[in-house]
Amino acid sequence: MHGTASRLSRRAYTPWWTRVAAWLLDVIPLFLGWATWETVAISSTAMDCVTYDNGGVSCASVTTPGTGILAAVTLLLSSAYLVWNHGYRQGVTGASIGKSVLRFRVVDEKTWRPVGFGTSLLRLFVHLADAAVCFVGFLFPLWDPRRQTLADKLVGTVCVPSGTR
Image (cartoon, rainbow, N blue to C red):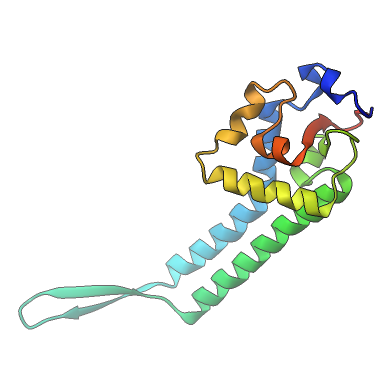
């Protein structure tokens, strides 16, 4: 299908809502990890209050050292998951976990092959940068003829149903 991507109809590309649903599936492990950390952090936090002679009270939250260690471990595992799911898995197969479940993949817009680890990871970082700017680039598929996000345009990828060639 080399060179024909620009001639395909808009319907040949993965719809925006399908992409949103895949993203939601992809972030479930991240959500569960951080929700676990938050639960532990809240349940292990204590209030340390001091009452002064003039009747004033000063309170501060006190956490255990384990809370900080758990936060660091959660951050490390979250980062590893993102690199594996969006860098390695998506780069090699064309699909993250969420994209596999919803049966579509990210491919190079010219060759229609998976883009590889580096480009897939770059695409993730461009998406993260785009998120910092009010998520506007994520809305591009709503009007773009090839339903590309800003990150897709910058790294040269398209999202297509699995089995499309």
